[in-house]
Length: 415
Image (cartoon, rainbow, N blue to C red; front, side):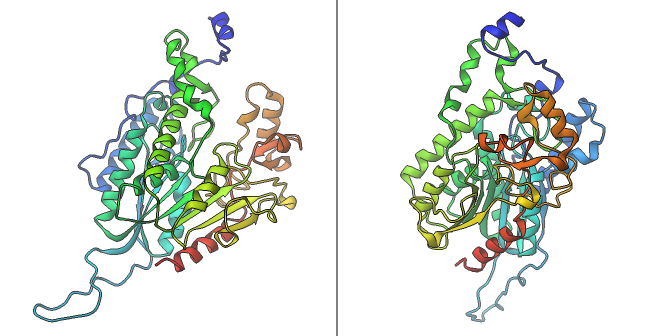
């Protein structure tokens, strides 16, 4: 078997229970449910999945990975209803809330990543719902068999439940959550605007070949994986399946096809990192340059804040310096947009350090990165940044307060 692994260029890392499907989480499971019932069903599913793996802190795992909902801190006044037979020129809301937002997390991640954004929207009067994409939140093996239409079904369901309670539906997504949000908006006239964070508008074409493993992975199970990792993180998989790459590529192709047929003419607020190595930042800039609504805005974290990206007007983009020398931050990253520095798990003093880019080929650096996080540089794992010394992939946004200011300015200018 070792020889076969070498022949196919596949790492011989051992597969464990978490690398097999749980049997609980590859399809959308909310048909016919209220959102409250959907949350309860998924919390129960998460409890069963993590209990099977012998999780130590089961409640923490459930709370971080589960879908959730929030009601606004300062909801708009209740609907104004005219007395029978009376005439009124006052607007009359038919639903409990004016605005609502559906939050969708990214590939291999969980609703935990949307918690701080949810708090921002709640503070600004939004009804908030956050979904869990099938294949996520349980164990990496659940991404072996999932298909992207199940993700799209989940977002469509969330939009339906949200529309039952709000007059104005907004969608907000991180990474493929952004892709799915844009995809849903192109076939859903109820969507009034988008908030996209590191959206996967386009990814590497190599992902199109990720399904070729099926020719031989029946013989070599590890061939189904791009990476087999320790999976230390409790809210995001470190191990990564080839199927997840293939499904993401298929989703971006379907989005691209829809965008060629239909233009988005709703307000779009997008945030990205110029140094992102996961998604194509140029594609994001092109996407925002074509956005038709005059309120649309792009916030771009960059190491060259004086350099305007080509193809987009200065009035549409806000360039933010992503270098913080005093904090040893060399740049922003794909995973550093939606969480603040004080996040208990991923923040500056958080429980988790992202060092998996050193595993397993550079174990000395991996161990040093895990042991001494305060001494590490942080940023995107570019060749240039890796040359600076021991590097953690930056997991939080040191400018999160500034991002909230930009988002509030966008909200205030909405029609």
